[in-house]
Length: 160
Image 1: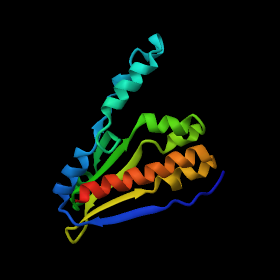
Image 2: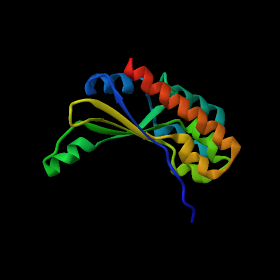
Image 3: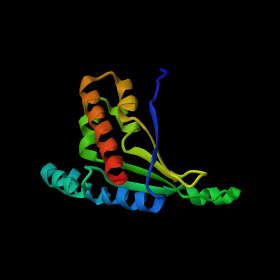
């Protein structure tokens, strides 16, 4: 067992939740798991790669899933706007998992966008380089550092 330290980012953005959300989501493509169908049988890695490349949005990321945590908070009488995004890119992930399979625990990434108590919009996530740095592999670290920059750019674009 090892203990790691994670850098957590919490950023307040100067846009209303719905506006930020729409811009954020507009930067994401959508992952379609059928991209892998038939790959094992025919082994056409170029076709799978091309299909995955076409799924990425302008940010280079694709959306795997959205979870509405705000809806769940209604169960305890505290509804709010709060969405968790599972986002990433399998072509980026494989650049890490080929060297450290444990990196698959943290890919895709998680991002939380929510409206705080004062009505402001916040974004939270764990810095990818701090998640993937635990594997002690320079090849993984280079990719993780690029993920830091991609995620920061995505949020900056959505904030404009």
